[in-house]
Length: 206
Length: 206
Length: 206
Image (cartoon, rainbow over the protein chains, first blue to last red):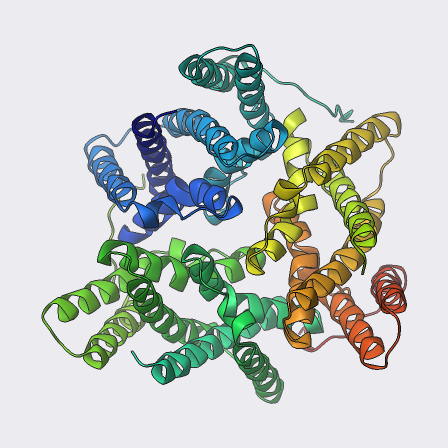
């Protein structure tokens, strides 16, 4: 993946997560700069963990542009929320789905560039994709999306496996990325719309 | 900032946060060394994150003195709590405010020494100032202070902006530090005493 | 400690924590790969923090074998849970106790190899032993084990002190390790069975 593509996808995924963080802050009615803090943690949390684990410079410290686009996304979100008060929780989950899929692919790419194996790369993609939203939900004291029965981690891991399969089959990078994104987003949105589930444990509720 | 000043401010801020952690542990009635663990995480959590993000040696591993002063502060706090059973929640929030202001300035300073820009430095100051108390509240399952409507992140960011403004205006270091501390602490304590708020979102509660 | 011993103990402790994470996921009825994510975070969380703080390569990125044994332990656990539906919460706490004791000793060892002092090493052992289970409980929205009155942090710190005492007395490494493990596990299990406590704070409940 060229640097330009990496930069573009990273910026978009950060914006999606920043929006999801600002929407959660709206739900919880936090103070004004508390919105900014929750949105920033959601947006850069996963990528920060990724860079710490790979022992790379933290992306938003090395290139502050990422931080400034995060602030831009937050300000636009706050203005739009104030203009449209009927923001639904579904919208937040939609933005979260797009951020999740993008962060997943970026995490896998960056791990492979740093010469980890594919198993580590898929694990790192999933963990870093989940991490920002997980911190958002923990801080806001909501049930983390990953703990609900709605194909959350499953969608990430499926996206990673599709990426790995196409890469081993010799497909060009952009195809791998696109197929992984489509897999994760469609599983995630399908789970929300039609209630798709892959339960491991079925408890008999008496 | 000379090393001695840095050392002194760092030790004081760690002691404040250690005290706030021990007070929360007292509220929650944890077991004896659980108090120590919660207080240690609160005291060194933010600074540890700061050093990880800046890729510097972790301060309490490089200089164990910091760890031993943390233990000292915890032991003194535990003894004082046992002598005075009427400890209020307000006291905890007061110690938290002083720790917050100091950690904020130290984070900004250390970021600038490591040659980040001012935007990154203010972000890092706020995030690392908030982080220890955030972990304390998450572990103790309390509503994090940053999620309440009481100028928490706002006070940090205002302190950072005052620091940056005075620095650009050419004021000496100690003035920048002092003005930032006064700003953060007075906003925070004012919010607690007189209910100052800067709401972004106003929901009509039907 | 030789590399082989280190590898063996590390693998066992990871498996214990992976099992405890899968058991908590079972309690909470998460989706299928959500189980994997929660178990992976529990199993490698503490060791990841340890390696980040010591500025060492993350063990599961440097040696992916650790990650694959984690996945193996999770799959076996899931199969066993499906065969035996009567899994109790006590079993989870038992596995957690063994993982805790092992992670504690490994953390102390790895800190000493990286030439920290003994005070830092005991702190690092306790914090990294607690961290994986703490993330598990926070994500699953349970009261963290470390916040309950049941000798959790106390058992870790006692194990660390026994290790340090025997090491200074000139005992061979394996004895130090064995004595520390026995101390932590027996304190932890004794606390669960006979309700041992070391309260610091006694509140009069009116």
